[in-house]
Image (tube, rainbow, N blue to C red; front, side):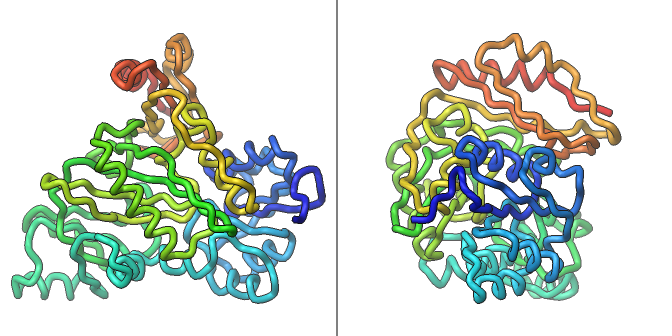
Length: 384
């Protein structure tokens, strides 16, 4: 096996946001050389990696030229030039997860069809080219309210999603290739992070429950362990493993799930990388999701995922109506609370609902962690 620690082995990460930063931090523990490519020199990972290259991950030449500099290429974002990745793979560059997995997942239409073709439970859906075709189908009563529109490509952090409850919401419809999903009567939104290495070893992190910000439609906090029955967790793990195996995944896969009011479980969507729903694992689990990603793509033994402490994770979001150079109010106050672990990403400019960091709150019980989290939420504010 090629030695990757304390050697000339180069790990390339496409691109350098907060996920890339936290993966780089773990790689440094193993003395692994990390190369980062990102559009901006101010990217969070740019300041801590071995070598930084400025480039556009959607540009063929930038991706290809960067890939030729490294021994193994991974990513923290889906929107990458697939043709460049395919050429690199053809020429012998190791890429995990595989470019074909990325190709399917980055297009929500292909992703949903993948679930249907592999008998993986998911909500009913149809694919449309534009807004006009959606409206025409509505006139024929072939779509019923409420429903959800998702752009096929380039949606993230709540962007590219429109919840249409009735006719008054039709002004929210986006005019681009998209999928229309039948709205699920949701009881809880859950997530399983599953890791798989080239040898076929596979492990799940304990199930987490996600709570969404209704205004921004992105995760505001998560709760671990999820407050569900052991049977529900076992079924979620079973589905997540089935998805990972269907993709022949190497690396990490975050599988987001719906638990509906009738107790049915279905896949919402997946992400082939470290994920917002796994940030708490840095402090709350024996192995973090970032260490697990390295173990998986290097074909090392996967780490133990047992929970060390119940935890709540809060996303630190830019306050509404504030945009400019970031200022954190209340940071020193929350540091007085035992078990509060802030992670500030290093983004210099705040915008409404932009992810500026996250905070993991540990407790002896999940109830204690929730109480502390409420204090943190009411104290820490991100302004300009």
